[in-house]
Image 1: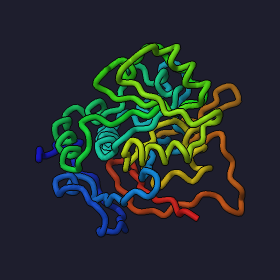
Image 2: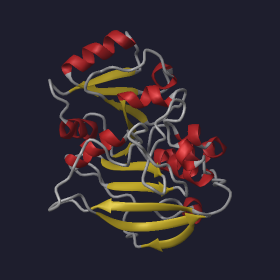
Image 3: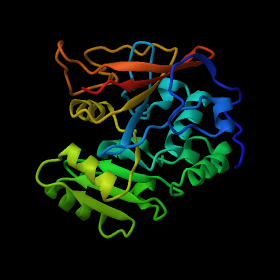
Length: 284
């Protein structure tokens, strides 16, 4: 297997209580980051999210040309390498319809965020029996999305649009006929558990990385469809005002005081003033 170069220096392990009984990374990747045992899927894909947030819990400056996480992470190489690793172990990457327009020219592949280790991540995917490029799953009720974007135009990137009956009609009008774009229609409502079951059994997705925004994250949490969270804490403050609304990690969902989602911390890594948290949701 091609040896990864890594982000310049290994992550510093501060805490790690992960079981080693599950599928772990190859030794060369472990030496840079951690074993990261990967649990088996259930009746849906094993699903994990990845976010970078500021010290005060914001995930975006929410300004033109400053919508993405790169401004929050200050393009930290360790955050980018970890993002690529998370994509490399995913059979599919889930994004929201609005994420595509906000992403500009970005595509959701490992090499897009850390090209220096493109060969190593490709070898890891092959070693773990994954396709060369993750399936891009677009979760959208309305079906509205840009007519053209690199992630939608490239025939090498398989795309699955999970949507409603109305949303599928809208998306098909916008995108016209593209052989690499398929549709998963789950009736008049976007039933997220049904989407997950279809991904598992119809599309053979065992690992799913969610890179959608705070609204989708909140909706998936409400349906208890998230297993783990990888969160980078950046050493910057973003703030917000009534005029400058800046989203937090979860938006569009409010959980009851008696039963909020709760995580168990699995590992904490550090590099400089950045912290990299890996946690697992305690499903009830």
